[in-house]
Image (cartoon, rainbow, N blue to C red; front, top):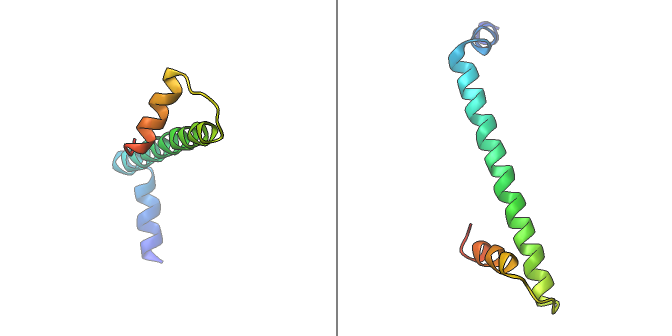
Length: 68
């Protein structure tokens, strides 16, 4: 029970908020990277289906194959 009180007290401190903010930023970055990867894979599939790619699409496919 004392642990819960301690974590509750820490929740509003600047250090806890900074940690939460950093985690939030990391989660945002992860979602953005996954979105780019999904888009690149979709373009790659379109190319495999025979659709010609423009330069921007080719760059996305290369980025995905290089591991972002």
